[in-house]
Image 1 (cartoon, rainbow, N blue to C red):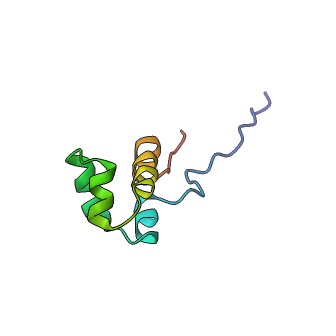
Image 2 (image 1 turned 90 degrees about the horizontal axis):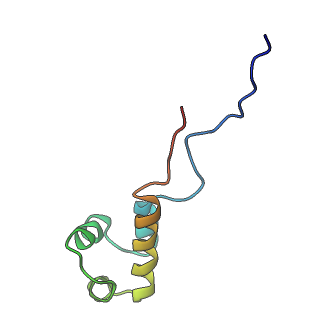
Length: 75
């Protein structure tokens, strides 16, 4: 019986993690997560970190879509 070919699926991605993205724009990662947990608005977080609300929107969107890291494995 011939073995079935299964393509390799590496458990990593080239997409940066949220921590790296936050650091790149000068946002304290732990404080950002605390703000998300407290359900603070993009405008509130943008004012706290001194960035445009679009920056916060993009970070929040990444978190909601991919979590902290976009690493997923496959068994």
